[in-house]
Image (cartoon, rainbow, N blue to C red; front, side):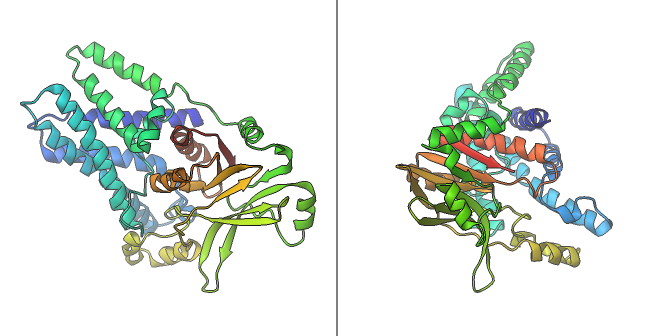
Length: 385
C-alpha cells in the first residue's frame, strides 16, 4: 500500500509541473488557475486522509463538512501562485528555449520558497521557509538525483524536476515526450525502499558500539518514569525517550529526553516544527471558529503545543547525534541548522498515531527520509511506532 501511495504522490507532482510548463500564451487565465487549483484540491483531498483531525475524520454534520472543506481549499490556494509564475514564463516568446527552461526552473523553485514562507507566516512562524510539506521536488527524493539535495535541500530538487520536465516538453516528437515521461516516472521511484524493522536495527549497529545497550523510543513514547529508571539504567547505556513537558505557565512542549546512563548525563531536545492541526491550531485559520466554534475549541484545547527554536547535539560513544522529532524532518530550516552542527548521525523519532492513514503518512515520510539521507550524507536512525 505504501508503494502505491508513493507512486500516486509522485505522479501528482510530476503531472502538475508538466502541466505548468505547457501552459500556452493566449490560454484563458481563469482556466489555468482553475486547473492548477484542481490539482491542489486533488493533492490535499488525497492527503486529508492523513491529517490529524481525528474528531472530524467523518463529518457528522454540515458544519463539520464546511470546516474540512475550507481547510482543504485554503491549503490548495498556493497552487494558483505556481500558475501565475508559469503564465509569466509562457509569455517569453523571443528567447532561446534553453534559457526559457532555466528561467522556468528558477522561477518555480523560487515560487515554492515564497509559498513555504507565506504558509509559515500563516502557521505562526517567523519569516522563514519553514512549511515544506508537499514540495514538488519530493518527486525525486527516491531517485539518484536526490544526491543534489545536499546543495539546496528540497528546493534544488524542485529546480531539477522543473528543468527536466521543461526539457522533455520541448521535444517535437510526441512519442518521445511520452516515452521520456514514462522513463522519468520509473526513475523517480528507482530507489524506493519499503522500510522494515531490520533497517532500524542495521542503522543502530552502524551508529553505536553496543547497540543492544541502546533503547530508542518513538515520539511521545514515554518510556522512562520514576519507578523504572533504575531498572532501565541497569539494562541500557543510553535511552532516547519522547515525552511532553509542561512549564509553570501551562505551556506544552514536545520533547526528546536523552538519558546517558553511562555518564550520568541528561539532554533535552525540543520539537521546533509542530504539526498543524495535530499539535497546534494555526492562527491563520482562526476564522473557522465562526463556522463551528465547538469543534474549533475542541481542537484548540487538545492541540496547544509550543514551538522552541533551538536544537541540541549530544555526544555518546565519541560520536555526535542530532534529534529530529517527527515533522521536524519536514523543515528545511531546522535541517540546515542541524547540518551546520555537523552531527555524525541523525535520530528520527516519529509517531504515526495521530494519523488516520498510516500508509499514506509513511509514504510521505519516506520521501523526506530519502531526501534527508542525501542532504546530511549520514545514517538516519528512523524510530517509529
